Image (cartoon, rainbow, N blue to C red; front, side):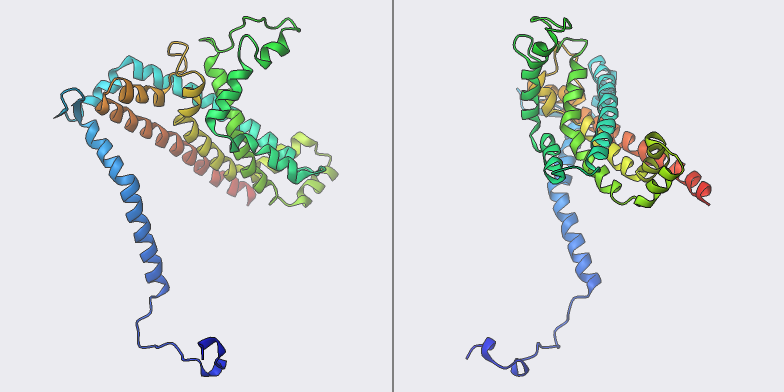
Length: 314
């Protein structure tokens, strides 16, 4: 006779002599396991990269010479690196500003009542679901000077011609930033959409009764409630833009010339084209510091403004 066929009262009770793990013990076990896994997956490569940044590696002779912080000094004094940093900052500024405006606008539209709203929301997320290589392919066809959709649309209006080069040195970085916004803005819009649905509708009704227009409601009701969501969106967009590689490499490969060569692309060339592994590692740590500084600036800005809002509310 199986245990399932026995009466419930006759089933043997579990032995209580064994030592059961407490909730705190279970939580600590899970945390230690996660930290150990992160150390193995992230910490070991990160430590090896830092070790490489302190050594001058000769790929031909297969030798490594300890040089200390000399490579960091070489990185900071290299004009190609400083140019790439300034180019990265400009690229990040365009990407973050465009993504913020586009994400908020998309979220405000998706938050309204409309037919087939679920289908429209799913389609709005489609650009983010595509890989960045696919996004680059779409924009390469869009910006093709011979048969691109943009050329075909603007030529009859006299704003372009069959030979118009959209990805010129002056405009290439702008178009790559626009492709980034098209790809990433839907993700930010769903952060905003989730936050918009938590705002009480009574606030909007009362504002309409008081005669507040759409811009006044946006300024005094919507944006204050989205402050912390905006922080999350800005941090995510900034980190994504700072470490951007796939989109630029697939669309322009850093060109024309070096007009779209931001720091991640330069690190790639140091490592895979010039075999300067130590220099690439030092530049990569510089990129990490840049990301941390920008993210910290956002947190400090929000934290600085928080007490003013509390006092005002009181």
